[in-house]
Length: 571
Ligand code: SAH
Image (cartoon, rainbow, N blue to C red; front, side, top):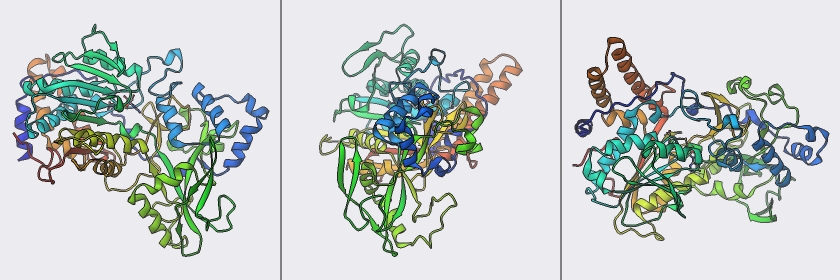
């Protein structure tokens, strides 16, 4: 029923616009592959490493760093001590000096394209135009269901890459002129100046000028001359309770920095931190020593369990892949030995004292671990543990909470941004566990479609981590009483449910009429169908299974489910 209704809506797209999307090699999607265990690059000799660095012995002076960013990071760590994984990731991805998205490292790398066959990874909108068309259609169905507002619609995309997805969505929405006319502005939240230009070139006329204001950069879209605004942060987009924001986040959350923590058993006699029985912990911060209240759990053996943060510090000078035991799954031949490694902080850090206490989900891991003594918990040989107990790991992304809170507030309002009538929707597509579990061991480095060490060649290596969909849902409903969350559902389920297969077949029919020659026709049809199958593949590592979709929509007591999440088209 749902599928038929959406298919009907899709058929009403009058033009079967066929785009030439370069066919990509069928490289497996390494971005969503499980990386090797964190312990593979964890060393526990934190103090030795830190001392080595501060001694500035001859070895250190001669040390060659793999990138200018690596050198800068090492200098910063020498000054302040090992840094949280989130700080490392932020510098590597969006830092001003040689960040993966934001900085050009060398002249030869300046026009480096992260996306596509010649780049590092491939994303769904780059694989098939049908992906973006279905996303565009999803917003059309929300616009229809929310009373077809005649004005005040905003399209907001965070992390728009090359702009391909927004282009496909806008082209599709143009086929629904009433909705197209209701769009006041398109907002692109993009940290990379290079990608901002690529997006402008795709979405605006080639010669369209870009002007700069306090908010960001402005131009006009080739579709209906709609104003487009580029901002570096989502906070620069004004909150307006009269607006209907339609928000898209595709492969964005996986690029947000994470903190990683491990649960350790602290014995009362331990000299690493304040005594376990003490309710306070002393930590060292860049502004001097501070005292914090210490959340801890007693274990049956009298010791306490505490979260300790995994920090990033330099590897010893002259390390090799074999001395660091870089796993073969991280393709050591593709990069020089990692410049950095993870080390377990011997004492609490600012983040370990409050982040794991933020959600009942994290607290539950700790309290269930406390009731199971270390002797009854099955520990993995590397010292970590997945099923609770000492050694358990968790990853927490504060930025994920910030973005989810922002989306929910724009859609549903909040005490600080009241909204009389919740309106709008957010569609979040990414990879991560769909069963409510907290991501562990998920940081990965990607180069040229291969997994590499996330600590090798900082700034040249893409970094990503599993998305915690439950954290997004939790943040959204905590931020706004005006929203409800649906999903996550598997990407294959969403796209099939929205009638994508029928769309592919209608493109096939249109192509067969316009393409010349049997060979060209055959290739066209095969490419189109193969790309589609790749998006919906439900095999163990298939994109249709590994990628998930989550929707944030106006609260309606669960009476109306969004299309693709089990709901019907409301006309
Ligand atoms: N959505 C696109 C691109 C995904 S790659 C696609 O699916 O093809 C991640 C994108 O997010 C890039 O455009 C990158 O520059 C951007 N990005 C990463 N971190 C960001 C941040 N903190 N703020 C804004 N943009 C960011």
